[in-house]
Image (cartoon, rainbow, N blue to C red; front, side, top):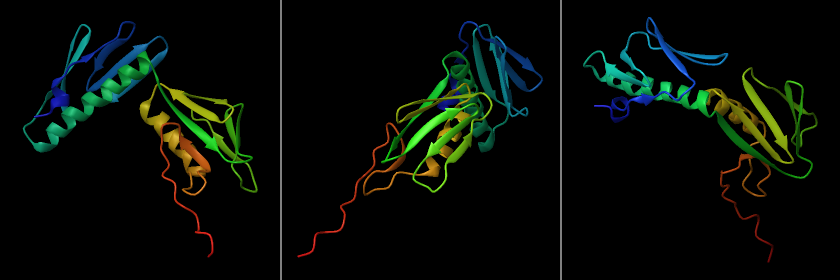
Length: 178
């Protein structure tokens, strides 16, 4: 039995939730998020609470029950508060700047790395901190991971792009000759 699936999702004020066939639709102002459930879970909307129920008794149905509840909760949090991830650039000459819809990164290569900012995301740069924010948890995490992948932190000097809360385990360099 899913412990996550049992819990109801509370709908924050200002967000409208409706059911369109097997698709849950959440609206806040001009933002609209949809979650297609493909009929794998039962959905009940009671005012400011949405509850999910299992449709079948198979193991896969239990997995879908908890998964769709978690995905819908992520939509609610995203529309209400939003998501953000912060990245830190370490290294001599490593820089970042936002130019229009492009994040321009100088990461020690012979060329600049241009990252096209996906639709619905906002990227801000403050000195050596890059902040990726938006309403979609998956898109924010994916964009942050792609930026980090251009120059992951190396274990000797710690140069590269890392999450601000990430801890880089340092290695000792070569031992000095005797």
